[in-house]
Length: 256
Image (cartoon, rainbow, N blue to C red; front, top):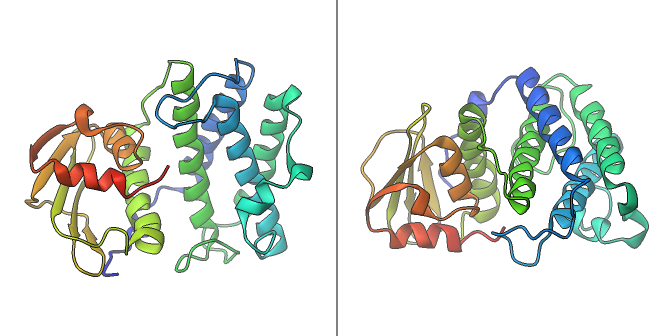
């Protein structure tokens, strides 16, 4: 895949850590609410499901970093489904706080450029996890708040970084072939510096961080753009111009 490397634009380790702490603290606070509340934009997922999911991901990553290889032969999915590893949901907030603190120590005890195990094919330093786990916490904080009708927007700087990461990691390493096709999309943030040209072709997709003219353009806040690319919100929250069927396609390609 022909794809730029956005990691040099990543935020500082200190800012990631601060945002991670704030997001995980908020998730722990929400754990005392009714865990049966449905997350409106993700079918068959409750607030409790999301908290457990994030906590199990945190546990998997922290243990894998310490081990220097992924825990379990198949990675996070079978490990997370092991009944032995399921948390005691009677004290969900305390369990989540503990696994978040463990992950903080596992990641931020390293310098950003220290080489450690990661799940990326190209990025093998602690900075990968600083970014990935902060974005994981921010997105699922929004999900869990949505279950209780009180979602707060993701801050512009963090949302811009999240869009970069979505294309640089998930699309580049996991979804490139799925994005193969025709058409181009231009995304433009209105409250922070951020523009992306996404051009699909027969073998995958080219993503460039620049101004351009696509077959469809979508403008909105950085938070709304991030929620769109992650299929949390439709493009109805954005100002659009051109062939919006390409925006429908963009979301159909992603399974949240």
